[in-house]
Length: 168
Ligand SMILES: [Fe+2]
Image (tube, rainbow, N blue to C red; front, top):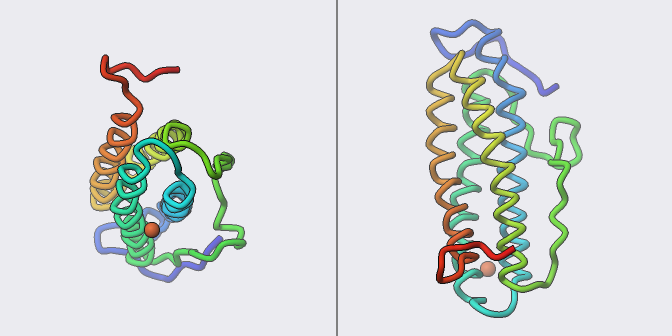
C-alpha cells in the first residue's frame, strides 16, 4: 500500500478521499501500460496503411501519458502517494500481455481494440466507484473515458470494410 498523508481535499473525510487511492492507482497503472502498449504497436506495425496507423497512434500516446499524469496528481491531491515505478507491488500490470510484435496493421488494430475494451470497462467501474464519493475524481475519469472511447472508434474504423463490417 502506498503512503498516505494526514489530509485530503476539503469536504471529504480522510477515509473517503484516500479510499479512492487503490482504484486510482489501478487506473494509473492502466494508463502507464496503455501508453507503452501503444508505443509498442507504433514501432512494430507494418504493411498496408502503415503510415496511417503509425501516425494515428502518437497523438493517442501523448494524451494517454497525460491521463497518467492527471490521475497521479489526483492521488497526490487526495493525500495519497502515486506509485509510478514498475516492479513495486502497487504497480500491478494487467493480466493480459500484448503478444503482437512485428505484424500487419490489421493484426495490431484488432489487438488494440481489445486492449481498449478492457481499459474502458475498468475506467467505467472506477467512475461508478468514485461517483459515490467524489464528483471531481468522477469528472476526471469521465473526461478521460470520452477520449479513450473516441480512440477505440479510430482503431475500429480502420478495421471496418466498405460495408461497415469488422471481418472476423
Ligand atoms: Fe515514433
